[in-house]
Image (cartoon, rainbow, N blue to C red; front, side, top):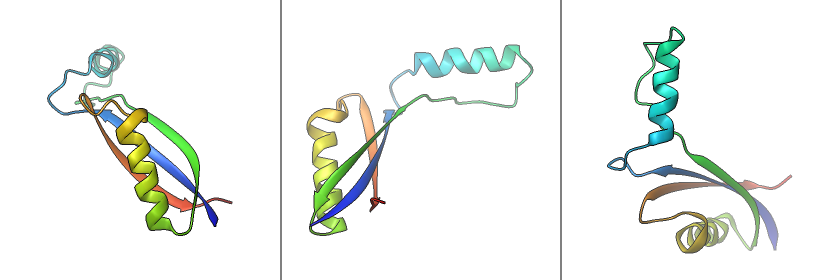
Length: 85
């Protein structure tokens, strides 16, 4: 069995107002960055997965995100897998 590193990028779904992102965008505009728009703030979860292969590690990580790490009612997630160093 190998160890894989999973990185899950979690963001609010597009239809949900990102209050934190909007606040940051307004602050950026106030300090001379009017060219920056549509700011969205998310989170990253990084963890190791023991699995026989990368595909199994990905499926396991996605299942963990679906069941606990991400709030799938309000959030989308994307997982990448690489071999742990």
